[in-house]
Image 1 (tube, rainbow, N blue to C red):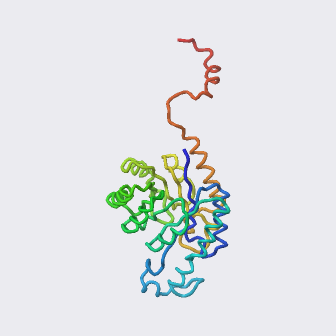
Image 2: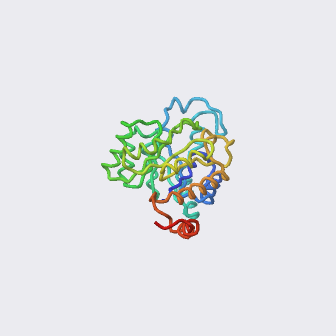
Image 3: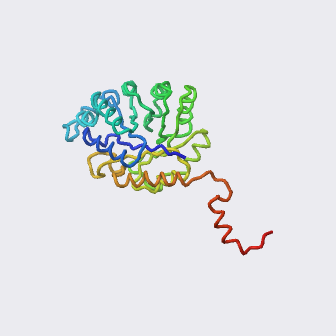
Amino acid sequence: MGIFIIAEIGINHNGSMDIAKQLIDVAVDAGADAVKFQKRTIELVYTKEMLDSPRESQWGTTQRDQKLGLEFNDSDYREIDAYCKERSISWSASAWDLESQKFLNKFDLTFNKVASAMLPYAELMQSIASEGRKTYISTGMSDEPMLDRVVDIFRKANCPFELMHCVSTYPLDDVDANLSRIGSLRNRYKCDVGYSGHETGLSLSYGAIGLGATSLERHITLNRSMYGSDQSASVEPAGFRQLVGGVRKIAAGMGDGAIAMNPKEKPVADKLRAHIPQS
């Protein structure tokens, strides 16, 4: 069973192309399948009043300065696209508005990603589903009626999708993880279900794979003490290498569940049972 592993860079690049490339390198070196960013049209996602409000940051004194400072532009994404091709890793971004999704269509992306916060945005869901591209859908902050509507949109569009169990707290407390929801989602929607985690540590991610998650997304960072709201819920390079290696081992060890003797056990059985009378 192959687990599709997404290294979520999000906005942990802090507006720096150098940091973004270092994080892409982390993902490649660890053996991840893809990296993912976030794309927003700032004026559409936030109100003018909010953007004009004060916020001290390295980019200026308003919320607008901070939001724009974290947002990559067209030339930045073209550089990301070229660098990911150079490093032989897929990339995508979760769009927070229709213009951002349209923007991402400039690139030959292999998959789409729906952020949990966007689940009620029916027009955006319809736009993404209309592309027919494999889509990973995080399920944080949702209930059955909300997910029913989203799944219906993707099924009516005949767009391949995979749900990703997610709890949208940053960082996630272990007791709130509700990993059993992976099975509940799989049973209700008859589809593959992955896991998008925001916890500290690696144990819950390993547990998700053991419960049959078919994909895994974790935020990555160069250092959890860096500026940014997602950094504390992210995994540093050494931890991410350990995570990917562990996930690959668990996936390899899952097997098919058949109740039968492994052929490699046969000589051991013959030796250890030689004294037992044949019946």
